[in-house]
Length: 161
Image (tube, rainbow, N blue to C red; front, side):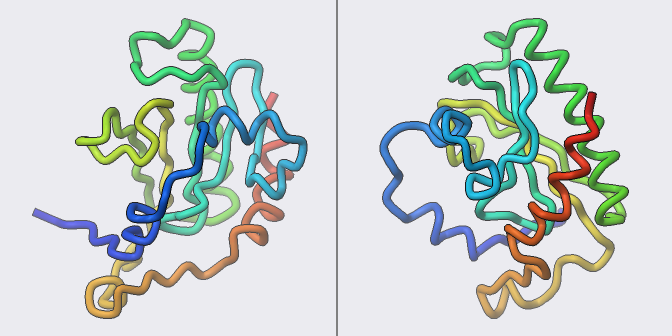
């Protein structure tokens, strides 16, 4: 069995959680760059993960504050699936990954850091993107800054129609 080690995430896990829901609050603000929002759809949006596993780690989130897949409307389901497909195409073009991890953690026990507002994760993966640094040094090497990544990706996401 392969294991993905992410010891650098303990900082996020242990820190005090802010009041409110970032997935509800961030889209209400107007500074998309500061909030790492790449795209705003009719019923969902795309936001970069502030604690990424890899460069280009993004999330697709419905605007509505829901925690169960069964509560998604058909419009939300359709748009989120469309955005999943478009996102992999854009990330492939921009970053040339060898593959992707795409998933959703439903519930805290399943690993959801924000368990009351469901969201899909898309994590680009490259051959050899895991190494000794996280395991022995508790350090993850992310080769591009978040805001530099946003500057690279955001114009591409604006081509979604």
